[in-house]
Amino acid sequence: MPTGQGDPGDAGDRLHRIGAVTDAGLAHLDLEELLVELLDRVRELLCVDTAVVLLLDPSAQYLVATAARGLEEELRQGVRIPLGKGFAGRIAAEKQAVIIENVDHTNVLNPILRDRGVRSLLGVPLVAGGVVTGVLHVGTLTPRRFTDEDSMLLQLVADRVALATEARRSQVERTAATTLQRSLLPTALPAVPGLELAARYVAGDGDVGGDWYDVFSLPTGRVWIVVGDVVGRGLRAAIDMGRLRSAVRAYALESDDPAELIRKVDMQLQLFEPDTMATILCATVDPSREQLRLSCAGHPPPVLARRAQPATLLELPADLPVGVDPRRPRHTTTVALPPGADVCFYTDGLVERRDSSLDAGLERLRSTVFTGPPESVCTTVMFELVGAEPPADDIAVLVLRRQDSEEI
Image 1: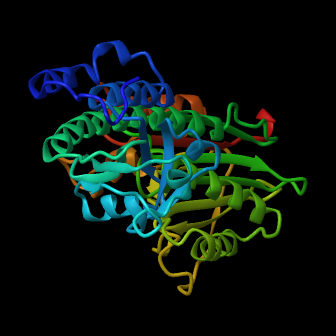
Image 2: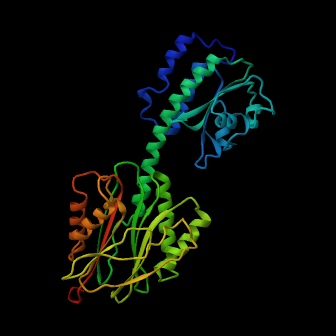
Image 3: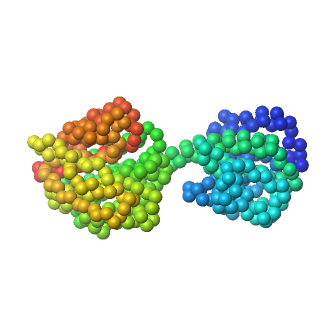
């Protein structure tokens, strides 16, 4: 392996070799393997002894050692550098290259660099889409005066590394978000005496969102129906959705009032997840199956279809989404649920379209819902409102029907 004292080689040749840093041969590697391979190539390209990638954590306040060659201790010790502090933190905060010719305690925060005998350092920001995502730095165990040309070459490499790692990380996050979301949706709807249930879920054309539905019954005989939509996309939305789903289930053990349940969820968000916002519709069917009690936190209203009557959008108080202001009052509405009635719950991806108004989408849904087997209602709703067009947003639909006494 060349050291800091070696000849870095002809600049034209080095520039040509940058093209090999992210070639097609790396496509099969996972993120960790990819970064290690890239660092090996960087060390050879610039004739240096150490190479490290630090990526910003989700809080965007710390740089975390993610891959290292020659300084593997950084990974083993879980090195975290505050943004704006030390060598790497300064690079990320200022979004420009930094060169240190003589490493000492005044210019380097991480003691591993000094303990390993690193004498000179060059670091550049990793930038993807104009946003700093991390830092790439290299070092030598012998003194070296890094030049502007070295800095330019490392930045070219860093730009390629940033694009490659962001693409790979985005792919990993999409896979994780999809897996998490699907694991939290009911694998099968429960068998509930006196009720029939059917549901559909379709992912939108893009990142996974935070849409979900849930149905569960309690020992009291009460049945809960929950439909929600977390603001945002990707892995963060899926994680927030999972936490909300768990919170709703926990509070349902303490209260049979949907408004009170949502109020408690809202307070929990404000305390522990202040950056999360979501719409939720909570409904509960009493043990007699004669009444439906609902509370709506910024969510579109369900459609109720009763025999010999036109289907209607339920008129519910327009309470705020959770995560906005827990001091605002919450309301519960009680609706009669006659035998043979169907109720269609859904998320806004079903009715919102760029080329038409929300009112038009709601009216289209209202005119589509009918009394009948929930599977048939779901199929018809998806056929009429989704059709052949790929949905731009996630869609969750849940249909509940109260059975006739002779059907039970």
